[in-house]
Length: 94
Image (cartoon, rainbow, N blue to C red; front, side):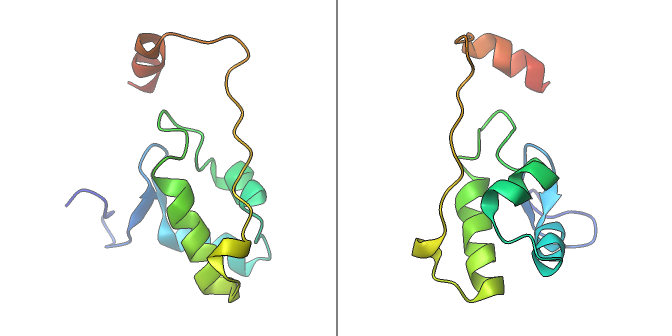
């Protein structure tokens, strides 16, 4: 089944194969800022640029910390310095 790893753990970031348990583990270690989690696990750094995983990670942070999801600041979007054609990005992802 797509979206679930071999252990039955939901894959939250499909671009980088980051599971829910990996995210929960770093939160339990004290990393509750989405920018920290992004740098540790590379969520949101794949071809989708976090369109799918960032909202999911924000909900996991809210659930694990008891903070309202509206109080969690989304990560800063950093586009490439020089725009690249989508075809180049697609090939890089393969």
